Length: 306
Length: 297
Image (cartoon, rainbow over all chains, first blue to last red; front, top):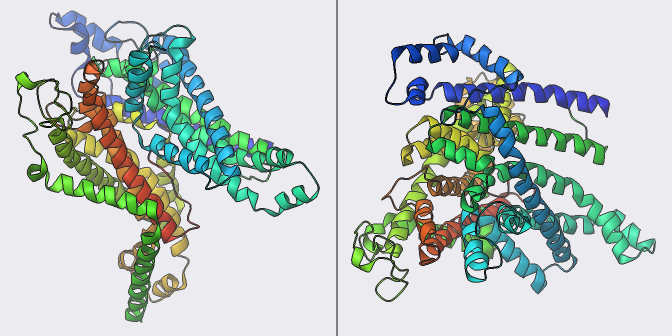
């Protein structure tokens, strides 16, 4: 177990370094002079010179990279071109709001997806199964932003059950969470159903029934427990789509998180902020996947990493 | 000797495709997907003939008309016919799907084959690069790339192709690893055939099944990615009738004219559904035991 965790960690470190380097390169090749976009139309040579030196823009690329890494280790990602606030502080202020949204979406998707998946698998090819699987297929194919707008239209504008946008109490969270969770609940429902059906025909299931266990005990203790690995995989893999989906969802609902920050920054060409959001989301994503991998080892001791 | 091997290969491959089609025909969902895909292709190719109106023609006197006899899906805030814009939009989705997926296919096959065939340090380097690229959430990666370039459709094609090759490379690598263990490959190596013709004639053709499935699914992902970027205003620019940007422009009229948002969204969803269903069916028909990604990102 310990060996597995160490091996997995050793693979995790170069990926982190690679992600950091790629983000640096991406912003290094951005055309245009960042200083000129900072000072605006009216500028004097002295200010430009001072800023160029402060930002190390006249140094060779490897020195700039060194400064970037050094800053990163000290939680310094530079300052926004627009607000002049430290990028790191802004990220830390917005990030919890995205996590709140992603957490709520995940909750929606786990409850809805697993529940529907299990119920569908109990009577395969029944009308409930067929109906929900068609809905799930539609849920996987529908664009996140469109689902969000339709929810706003129906539950916000026509029925007036929930606010159409903004950040605040629980009522504000409902529509964005469903928007962001739809795709993955649909996917989770399909995977849960498929895995449940696959396990149903296994020998240990017959053994469990012939032991005289009640139907629900067999379903929960033997059948469902074995669907956990694929289900957890989906939840881990889907984390990236939560972060991607957050950009779309936050832009529709005016949710003040990382996704909206990324979009605002790109429209204002605020490069340090774009760099910060891309880097942060990537680091969160690979960390989640790392933890999911470790979790496999804990849940299923048969898994070995080579 | 070489000739015999080629014969053997071509015979087997035609058998595989005939058999696949026979199985595919029985799959109702896959056939439904194929119909949608076929319809999209026809709409894309014959857009100028099929569209009832000029998709760019502005007429403010008929702005925001609800769906009716003259304009089956209504008109937008410039009085443009939405049905015509959706028909022309099929062209853009088709282009982005095919061009981006082809870029990702070529890059993925190239790097995947090199990694799988040669192994060793080059395999290690390529696989670590794919690990790193998988570390970025797709849309944020695309936003980062779009930040560095002018937002227009050509940039979108390349950005999506560039972001999606690692998946293809991994699939290709896995295939090459298993195919190169076959006796006929060994025999050719023993006969002293050089790497390049060997890879092209004997390895690549036998790796294609999962690659084709991934290509089909990749088209769905690419269409969805372009729609998302255009919805955010980072892809196709007005007045291009991209479905994503139509939803983007329509969202300001959600209250008064929801059909601006409703119909282009359905077009995106149906198209993605079509490619996903067809891809799913193709996967099952080619090889029921094959492990493959089951959806668009």
